[in-house]
Image (cartoon, rainbow, N blue to C red; front, side, top):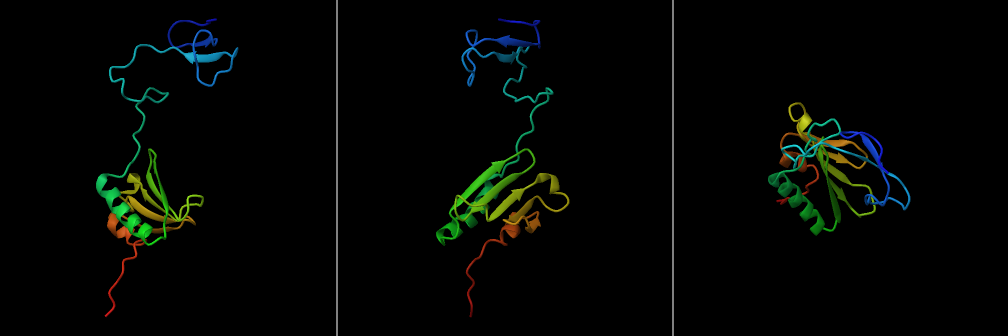
Length: 151
């Protein structure tokens, strides 16, 4: 059963006309017809037709610095798990003592703040910003406890 005009209109389809994941038998599924694919079909488009913003991510050097600190603390038995999240506004590396808890620390990269306060920040579990800056190594020094030689 099809209803509607040709280009860009909604059409109702029954299960016998097309398979839709999650559709129940006898239910109608609403689909949109689109025109031909754009020349750059690998780009993901937003509903308004603009390209979707690319997520912010850590580059190799930044991720290596974070994992160095994380690895030392895992070896000491203090941290056990981590999570990484990439959104269009910021990248977050969350550090957990146990997997079922809230993160102890979040290392955030927010490029929108790079010119003002610095792109990197370490945030505690209570939401307090412990350190913010442009240099990731200096920001990570807040949570990196190295052994010091006492003479």
